[in-house]
Image (cartoon, rainbow, N blue to C red; front, top):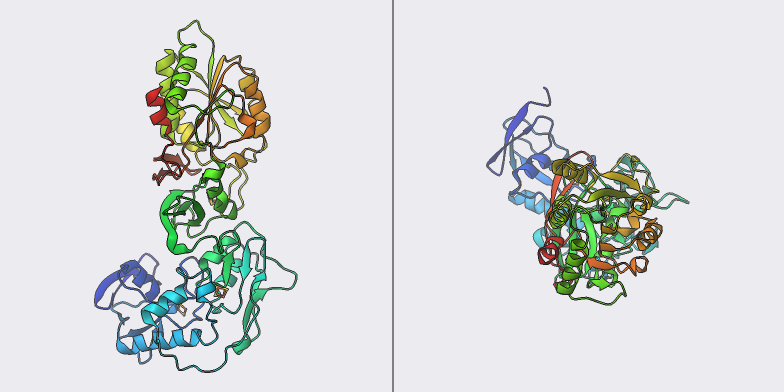
Length: 491
Ligand code: SF4
Ligand code: SF4
Ligand code: FES
């Protein structure tokens, strides 16, 4: 039977059609309305079939079967809600809890723990287990980013499979047998790779927790929204977590997108919330003497600087763009300058001098640390502009421009030569710098204007493969900040 052929079956009386070779779990997932409780199954990993939680009843089959490792058959009738199925779920959970510590009040997974959630949905509530729990090592330092509590582990083996199948680092194993079985790292090994936080994501309980997030904020205070990671040209889809009251950002997690990142994201990408919070942000426009300006004064100052260069006889204007902004922003700033100057500015694309642009780690992470290289190329083509690409800003300094208008990098750590490049700008007659950091290196430029970050604006990025993806605007950490188009409208 070829993989293209599909199989029809029913789940709780609902019809569904899936490719031949699919499992009942995949059919249930496709239906979307029904949930079969599970721990060890994960859509991005191989099937282990070890937790025995996902029991279902199949018409004509005498015993209950696991949904994650049972292939569908034509005409199969699956029941996920029969009384004996529900009883099996309760008992599976009961056995998982035999040795699980009562850590919930002090566990940082509380609120998003699959064990806790399933207990509320399908728990037995009145436990019949009165043996002492087996104690195991807690709070182990297993890598730069993770803490491991082996007592909380339910031995689902997701983390072991992730290490074997995704990163191929094979750092983890399950050691010993029976109720002495314990998750751990092999001797002298630590979890050291650029995808380690995924282990905290896929661990269904609080066994793996992330060092940078644990005990920072209870998850029920966090508001979740969707975005695109600005860390490199892959453009992983992400969930961004912001405190609903303080607007502070706490973490990023992968958002499933089979076309881009599957279920994962890299550790470098996880740091892309650090520049979003107020402590690192430029909070108001600044003049050349570093004094704060009102938005209207800044817009007037920008208007004067541009108008002083208007007319065919006046000096050259350089528009310097980093591929870290949206297509719409590139277009808006170019069109604004063209209309105000009565001619086109000379356009430069500013790239980091030390970047290894074509490198790729074989999983997701790319050496092009800009989210919108392709989008900038496409936008310039649409505008009919031929830009000069420069490695660092030396060329801009040599261009004899009287005014440079610069869309600086949003993620400054992607530009390690930033200080050297800003020194070039400081030598120029007049510079208007759009950026979101307080960076001392930019002090003294004619005008600095704060910009919104990727979580605060709408717009488009195009990833390395040419896929157009849309940013959605989230609450601004400072409501007083303006978008580039709002600012240009007042200039
Ligand atoms: S540490 Fe978590 S992911 Fe790994 S086996 Fe235990 S419960 Fe599963
Ligand atoms: S691979 Fe690139 S886009 Fe994906 S999470 Fe990492 S830095 Fe972000
Ligand atoms: S999810 Fe099926 S056995 Fe674990």
